[in-house]
Length: 184
Length: 202
Image (cartoon, rainbow over all chains, first blue to last red; front, side, top):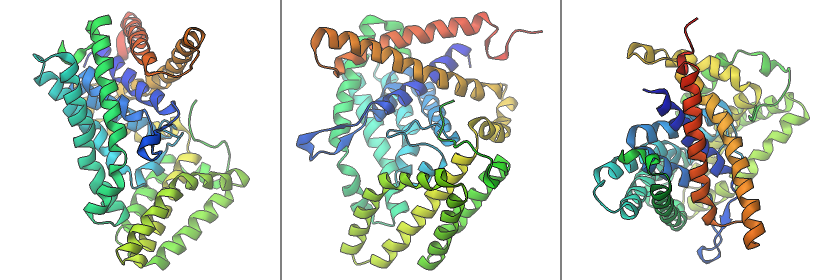
């Protein structure tokens, strides 16, 4: 792997960390469920970097969290977070970034806004919840259906992040086309 | 360095990082086989005593439970509704023990020591022709990038506030992304000029 790739991977890992520091926004019409910007970084890593580098960026981020960096939203970090019920989501993140990058590459003929939205929605929501919900069910000893109810309150917030991911990707494609590494 | 580590010289700080990691891993595996709430309660007492042995700072660490308590409350409600209240209590106690024990390792081990302890796990990378130094370099880069990005973000936000009056807008994100991406390209060039991740041959 080239050193340039390593820098890109570290860059997106740091972006996910920086987005975790952005204070959570409570959306009133969603019952005030706080949404954090962190998964936005996961979607961006996949969509911008492509499957392998995107997945590695998220893995590097999780590695830092495990080492004790307080990079998860709310200043959480350390090994403890991997024992909470949300561990499934954390495991789903790198896979989600991988899938998002893969779809981005597979749809490279499509309009970039649509392609980024589809990639982020599938990788960043479908795949992540596919890991997250069983994680909640297992760690919390709940049936899958109830774990789904418990997790579903975050989906509207995630849809907002899909839209933002698509818009950022389109803007970057105009301003700095070389940065869309998933398509170069 | 940014970390949840607590400065100190307690007996927990003196145990080698690798040993602590191994102990937590084994304890987690065992606790998932246990069902009785009394065992978890006993473990919880042991973990709490460990925190107390770190002094006031250690006890203050228990504040991390506040964020989790909301979720645990809902969890207990779900279990109560579906008629598995006792099981719910067990599950919650187990979660508390696991989270607190794992966190105990993190607050008593420096990030560098933790990195050193897990570096041997990256040795297999050498077998496929990659340097085991890369993950460590990646960690260092992230730790430098993250605060720098926050700096760029606050500069953009100040400029936006001066123009628009409001402080936060998603409109700040695209210029943030572009400025940060340029910065990362410069870092990549600088790294290459210095011989890449292997360094220059001596």
